[in-house]
Amino acid sequence: MIQLSNVTAKYPGGEGIELVSLTVEPGEFVYLVGPSGAGKSSVLKVIYRDIIPQSGHVVVGGFNSLTFKKKQIPYLRRKLGIIFQDFKLLMDRNVFENVAFTLRVTHTRGVEIKRKVLRVLADVGLSHKRLKMPYQLSGGEQQRVAIARALVNEPIVLLADEPTGNLDPEAAEEIMQLIEKINSKGTAILMATHDFRLVRAQRRKVIKIEKGMTRS
Amino acid sequence: MSSGFLYSIGEGLRGLRRAKFSTFVSIFTIFISLAVIGLFVVFIFNVNWIMTQIKSRMELEIFIDNSFTKEQIDTLRSQIEEVAGIESVRYVSKEEAAEVFRNEVGRDIFEILDDNPLPPSFQVKLRPEVQTSSRAENISDQLANFDGVDEVLYRRDILVILERYFRLFLIISLGIGLVLAIGSIFLIYNTIKLIILSRRSVIEIMKLVGATRRFIRRPFIVEGVIQGIVGGTLAALFFSLLFQILKTEIPELIVVTQAVYPILIILGALLGLIGSMFALRKFLKY
Ligand SMILES: Nc1ncnc2c1ncn2[C@@H]1O[C@H](COP(=O)(O)OP(=O)(O)OP(=O)(O)O)[C@@H](O)[C@H]1O
Ligand SMILES: [Mg+2]
Image (cartoon, rainbow over all chains, first blue to last red; front, side, top):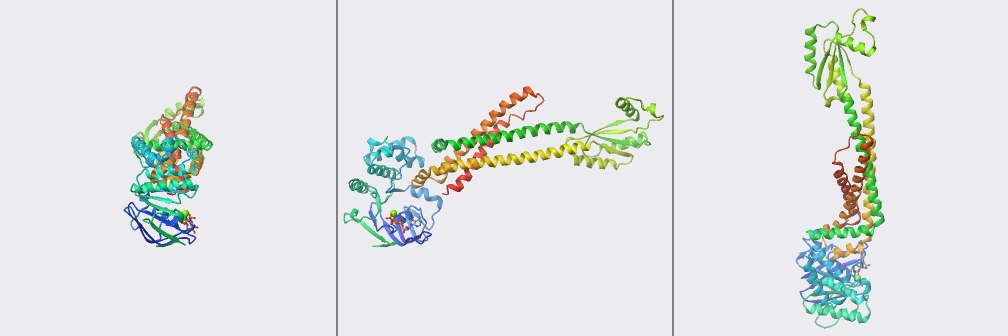
């Protein structure tokens, strides 16, 4: 479903990733672990095509880097849910509108929007806060909103870049449980973190990355 | 499609509200620019109309050899009538010329001289399309070469001067109009730039959740066009008011057709469109 083979993507400064290979199968939970600056975010960026690889081969949900066109970026991203440590919420609209944003951007009808948003807000446990503004929420709650926004389009995979990085241990634990719950319902997860303590449960795939290179 | 379009308009208005001051400035600039451009157009229309009036009264006078017989004069007339650009030819006999002389000078020519020295002539009217000075001169040269034509006269000096000033005025007003249009475009560009910069995070999130390029850009285009339309509408209102006042003061004024109003608004929208396109190209590369 996601497959990177020998992918090299460098920034103008020479930093970046080199010969990275990994796969994510449907429903799988994959950790991408490595120290700060190792290239975790860069791997995710290659997947959602924020950076273009110089060499190697990337396949994401039917999109192939060999034939990929710039025009396809929006349609690629509609298949992905993406969350970050800084949440990236729209501060001038409430929870409902933040989640609905994904659907408005993709021309969903109003009734449909309402139904889908309310369902996903229930999934992340925020139904009662749907009219609150982001600044009225705790960090953990804000990340839940971001997760709801990422999931509302029913993505093939949730890309999580250090999702608990800005949270206190308790909130972080809750978010991890939520992500696990999402995974147990069938959504694949690719989670980047520098925190090995977050890696748990033996069944899961762990990809280590260091100085831009993956090691298995 | 329609829900997406409504969304764009909503987002557009939201952006304009956020950049209130610069929105106001660019709308005002468009208004002033279009008003000035419009004033030029009205003035040019009127001057042009006056010039056509003058030109249509312009005639060539062709003096005929005094010794020409009636038949020769008739032949000459048919020759003249065949020249392209001639509208009508009227024969003025020696007697008629003397009559005109008496009317204009106030004395009978026969009081001064025994014989009537005034030659017969043709008064030639030109078609409107050849009434520019250069083409009239061409025709005059052509006519002067005919057998039996002594001299061709026409009041070309006034026409030349008039045309020169008119052209100068046209060029100057075109230049000023262009400068104003560019100024308007620049201010819209600036407003849209501010809105784009103030909405960086929204744009980033839009890209993230899979908005198409068109969808991201459309609100900004809408914003530019709205500013242009508002500015253009203000200019149109200004003109309808101005015309109402001027009409009573100067009844001879020809008001440019009703088409000015939609044209002003469309022109405003166009300026807005161009301004926002430039801003998008510079600040929203996606
Ligand atoms: N936009 C950029 N331009 C130039 N260099 C960059 C850019 N983004 C990242 N880098 C460099 O590329 C390398 C990998 O960065 P990346 O953000 O992928 O690391 P990371 O593993 O996500 O680190 P962290 O845990 O701190 O988020 C780093 O050395 C970083 O300085
Ligand atoms: Mg990172």
